[in-house]
Image (cartoon, rainbow, N blue to C red):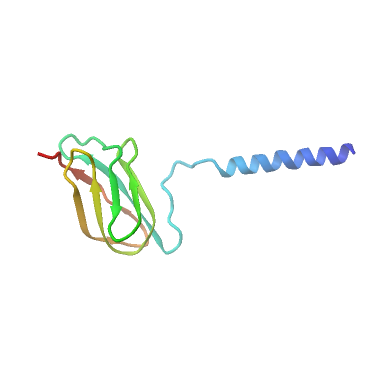
Length: 118
């Protein structure tokens, strides 16, 4: 009985430790699955260079869209290689479109500067 209980406790501790270590974030940008790409970058104010938190970046013609984090950084993962147009929107700033964006199977960095509406 003691051996069985000891074995069960050991297995539970092992499984908990394994699941906790698997959920730890490495702090790196996400890697794209094979054959897919990641588009990442920063959206900033063109005048001050400050990151714009909450800007919307969407890939036109797809359902892929993300918002920037508190530093203005974004990652759009699982993008197939090809040519796309990005649209960027932020309150009180001019909407910006980037056309003919070539996305390859590697990681793609696209930094975007927005101008304040006049």
